[in-house]
Image 1 (cartoon, rainbow, N blue to C red):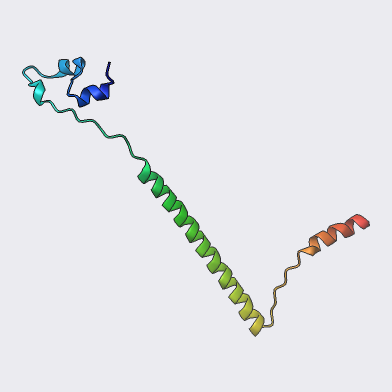
Image 2 (cartoon, rainbow, N blue to C red):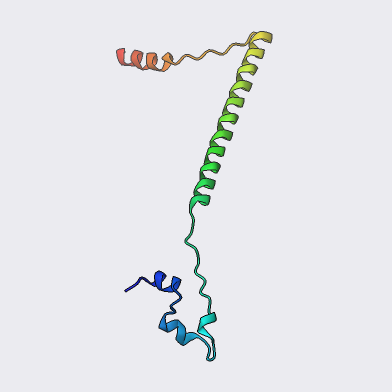
Length: 101
């Protein structure tokens, strides 16, 4: 027995399709159109491009904000004498001092 796809390619019409044809139809002139299987390459590529573009835009925004912040700090420290220092050890030092008491 042949699979249905091979039968359709060979031009054989299934019996239930023949019964659905209007009377007087020439079966030699009937054309069967099959839908092609779905191709997922396009949607997957589009998703990857959108994701990569979003990441790239986010990186550009982050680098721009960092550059602006660095230039603002440099300008303020040069003109007003304002400096920014980050001291991360103060939190740990306070917690150790509170344990000693």
